Length: 177
Image (cartoon, rainbow, N blue to C red; front, side, top):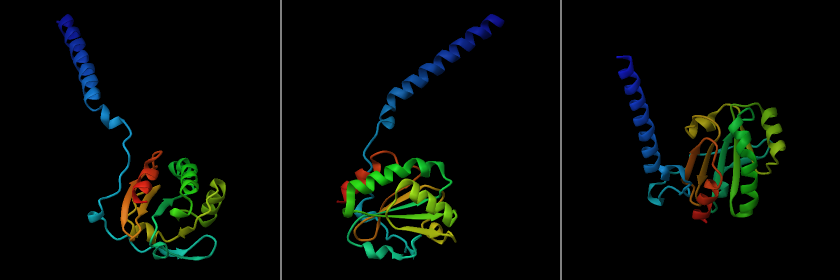
């Protein structure tokens, strides 16, 4: 009886491993990087209003940037994925220069924490401090980081919850330009 149980366990384990291998081979395409693509133009919704005061004390309004793509990144200084993607956002902003506007929104954070974060990563674009989380609420934020790309007409062309993977944001921006 014991020998039968051992044989059955080995057979079940072998079948399970074979099943995992077959499933992995059948779904390998899910593991390969595909270019990120914007939402179809006909399906885009207007971006919620975004206005406020930057950490530097300047008023800001998303409508000011109509005519060029805008990257809106919600972050918090204590957020590990935000810290991980910050250098990538800096490189992306340098790559696209004035063809794209980058805005960041510090939410669920302190003003001093956001300021230190911005200086640490060399962010030179406008940073809005959302102390009341009203912008996060308006954009339906679940957590940080969250990134939105707003098209030239002020509509949401792409959004991503979590750390943006290398190249995904650039793929979307290239498609819009």
